[in-house]
Length: 113
Image (cartoon, rainbow, N blue to C red; front, side, top):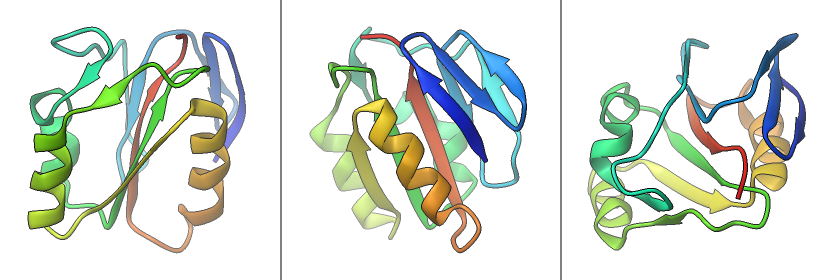
């Protein structure tokens, strides 16, 4: 469960994170996650998350939502039957908390802009 999000910080199960991160369906967290191209999100950036075969991937796109997923990523996920949602990080946190107990869900969070 994600306890709290504010600009630059995410608290997951009582643990505080100040760097972008990935949450895998098994609950494992990869902190200090970074993308190849700053505010672009591509398949290579979340390859391990995709390979974990979640039902849904939620992308927290930052506080104002500046991280943008590549169209090719969305096409790949659709081909694999993985639902995908990209929304500002506060909304992503709320969505994650709503679905993580009912679906095999993974998430990636850009914590700042």
